[in-house]
Length: 301
Ligand SMILES: Nc1ncnc2c1ncn2[C@@H]1O[C@H](COP(=O)(O)OP(=O)(O)OP(=O)(O)O)[C@@H](O)[C@H]1O
Ligand SMILES: [Mg+2]
Image (cartoon, rainbow, N blue to C red; front, side, top):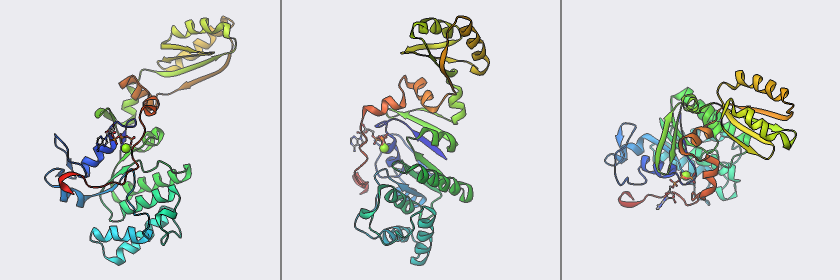
């Protein structure tokens, strides 16, 4: 399970479209399931499933027909496609929607239908572009369980993009981070987080007049100390050991706190360390352009 992360416009979808042979790379090579994406595109397509960011169901088709057609295009018999399709509708919590048109489904239902379509032919390798965006928390948890199950039960390799860093953190075996078209990190979540120096300690000082002295005390054990209103923050190595001493020190100087928060490094901190920007700030920069249906481009059409 590989989690592919990066801010809007970083190049995640573009990478996935190259790996799934929908877009011809201008240079370089890539192999997917052992096949070269440029010279063995057919073999790559036979080996994978792909759920695009924008989805690929026809809005006025019958949902069940769409899913079955997709399975039959991959060589499944009608009977197998129907059995497997109905099983997926069950697992992805789409009861009673087999005969409904995608245009009459909710956003989250349509998303789960896209996923059923990408999985019906039981590929060993699936590319999922933001499968959980737009799903409610329960549907998200459900889908992750399903995806984790695919890997556990059938050994399916899953390559997915997500903007939910906590999801990627918990579920992906490997995290790949892309920024401005370049891979800036590729490792386990734990190893990446170990690169971030220290835990974030955030003190909320009761009296604004004492913020400066609290900042000085924190700076004695922390790096990158910053002040915002009555909050003083900094990164502290092994906060569990260092913070009790800090609290005694503050108390000794008559500084009282309204709150204190100690946060372990997150994947967002990893991104910040690598690029100097927060994934969340970077997100605000460019709007997603993922609402066009996915089509073949260039000579492969
Ligand atoms: N066909 C195209 N022609 C020109 N530029 C494109 C094309 N497709 C994408 N881009 C641009 O390439 C950049 C990367 O886009 P891409 O869709 O890969 O980003 P992304 O990482 O998937 O972002 P998001 O999180 O918003 O989905 C963006 O600046 C986008 O506008
Ligand atoms: Mg995208």
